[in-house]
Image 1 (cartoon, helix red, strand yellow):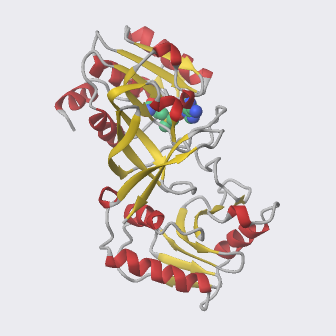
Image 2: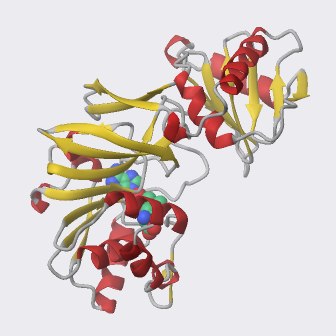
Image 3: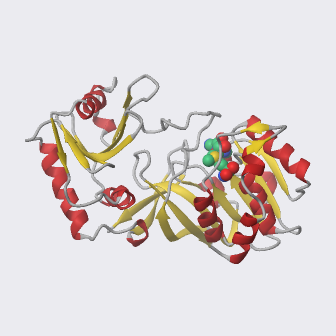
Length: 341
Ligand SMILES: C[S@@+](CC[C@H](N)C(=O)[O-])C[C@H]1O[C@@H](n2cnc3c(N)ncnc32)[C@H](O)[C@@H]1O
């Protein structure tokens, strides 16, 4: 952590914004370790113009305001009118003048802010949006959490610099933020993008399959996979020591396999593995493997994937090779982040 980031964080406990006597509490905040890491990577300089996407509690906007100093300017955008208004009121109460909060979809950029030196995104867009890239000056810097496959939670945090209008990834590290949305929501348990089947109830289970394009229109394949994982015919301990989840999470994306799938079982057991319409096998975060049957074809493939991971030495995300790939999806044109080993 740089000295200035340490100093601003030491001088401003997050409770000042998360729990507020008059403006109430909020569940929309980022973890201090992640905030420290992202702000260090962002390298905000005095006088910078900074856009933050995802105002949340307002805490990170106030930290950015401290880093940019009185000559700098922080523009903070949240999809939630309630959150943007709440944060704005706390900033005004505290006499913080160099940050302003606005309502909108931050992935569309914020044209009134003009050209920006720094952009930080505290939620996970589907990709690096062109609208944000186009607003950053040459030599500017973005820190943004990005998917590395079209599966929830398979994300890393990327530091991106701009040269000649082109984004280039400087570094990636393990990390995850709630998915960006186009409407406000307090839902933080079930991702809203790329969930292909889920159960009801207070502790919902869900599954995400990279082969969703080949599933039936009513998602029978995804529902069958989820049912197989919730009622596995075969459960076995992986048996090669504690699972380094961050490493498996990132490495699995390097397989770039359409059968890659992820799930959260009963709201507490993350799982990543292989599935097809006929079989399913996943390694869970607690080190057990669940599969439809002992002889499951998915289990055989999962074991070959795990062997590749072990042979690679369970690399941390920052050892993978990142690449930005064009995606002109009209919903969010920009750059997909993909990783290889
Ligand atoms: C984890 S919170 C950010 C917390 C903030 N960094 C803090 O520590 O107080 C993520 C925020 O992103 C906002 N958000 C989600 N999608 C968005 C979008 N498309 N544009 C702007 N904000 C968005 C959510 O409303 C939520 O407030």
